[in-house]
Image (cartoon, rainbow, N blue to C red; front, side, top):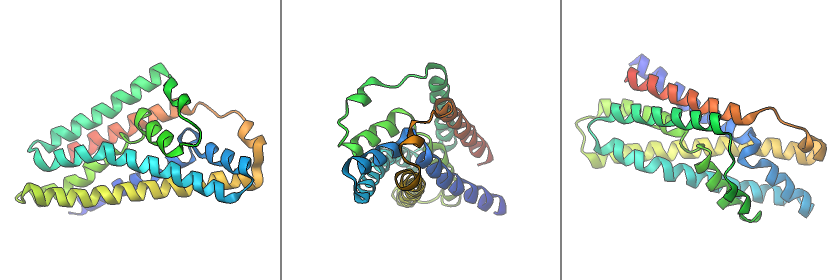
Length: 222
């Protein structure tokens, strides 16, 4: 039981840390929030933009995680599902590491539609997919203890975990991204935005691979 609790606590920590990571990553949109505030010369514009970005990210999490939540409640072979999810995330990470391509259609999304932009970025770059192995790992202990329960009861449990994961992750993202955006807007300014960033694309791809490996490890542990 102690090992299960330790694994569960570690997975919840991964949910929060991934949210913080997504928040500070400029590819998830905080520079757009700074840009909105600078153009309107109003701090309120910063928070409106952050809210829209968070909403899009949150909806992307739900879209990707909900089918896995339903499958993990209905399928007998949940360990195989977790292995498949882990391998899928690793595959996406390897693809992004090799190609380094930015989908062109994202550049055609109007700047004022930040929620839509955030939603699409989270889907295309695998941000939402990154949570799948972590989420399935959190569902695992519940399923082991309640394997005799009906599918509807398991789905209710998994839906509760789904709500907690999406809210905790998005909340951590908004806090981290909002903190960076506010610091840039209030103190660091445009000079900071013009500075070149290190290769975040490679870091992002490697983080996907790392989460996939984590998913495989928790599947084996289960």
